[in-house]
Length: 106
Length: 120
Image (cartoon, rainbow over all chains, first blue to last red):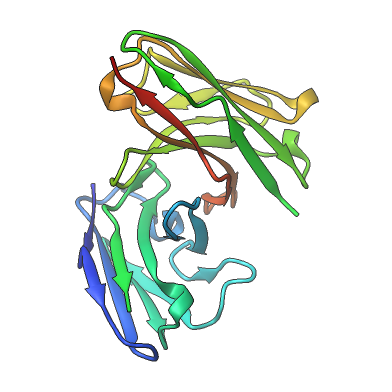
């Protein structure tokens, strides 16, 4: 199980925003390889932001970053932009479990 | 440009059946694992199924195993999801996605989704 926090947040343009994802248990291997983050705008399919905890997907702005190990992982947006609104999901691809999502508003 | 386009979603009665399709373009379809992910109205994402690049193996979420079947036709760059014995809780937007990453797998590209509504 993947638990995200907070479930929602409101921030201003330019703010630094951090979202946390916690795994309920170890899977006995390098879970970091299997930890991904997605962004979804209303009515649209999700887009991949980061994979393998820290690797930015091609075309994703560098204000997005990820870190973590063990069972705790974070997504940080350094300088929130209006186009960043939407819902963010973590995803553990070993068992294909998604976090519950974090809604970000401005 | 990678494109995935789902179709086939509609209103169906409980216990009914439906087949969803996803047509891929912009990449060599036969080289990639593919997946279905669904999202109930107002809810989060739920993985449904994966299929190997050559169709030789499929993997399912416990919630759908035995009722949903994923398949593909590499000659037609198409992915399918057969939904049988549909339940109210199967109501969702169904997305197809391309699986990238090898040892760091992720759903790298997604379609826009197709809505399946199960209601009497």
